[in-house]
Length: 164
Image (cartoon, rainbow, N blue to C red):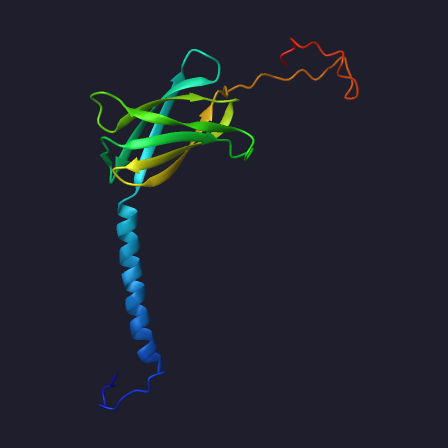
């Protein structure tokens, strides 16, 4: 590399190091913006399905803010607060007739609480998306009765129909 005087700069000079590094940084920034522009998104809503802790869910799948039709995806769920304890088996999300980008599935959970839906998309692109979902928690939690007729050591006197 030459400087303004026509003399060649030493190969280890700051300028000869900064120019290629700056170009590399610029290329990385530009490619990151393209990746972020192609992010797929989900929006899920669930309604009770008739049995306790069973829900019919609809998910809107979009890519670059446009609905994605004919996608192949499976859905599973996990409780982030209890890793490995409460997990739902994968189920297939089926396209909703005449609604482009909308899919439907039945969600069967073990308990109410904060869940994370995991969408595994295999077509028309490959991606894994996570979406938080709160299931079955009312706005006003039932107050727990503080007076018990038994001690921690003796649970034999607890009525099994007690739903505190």
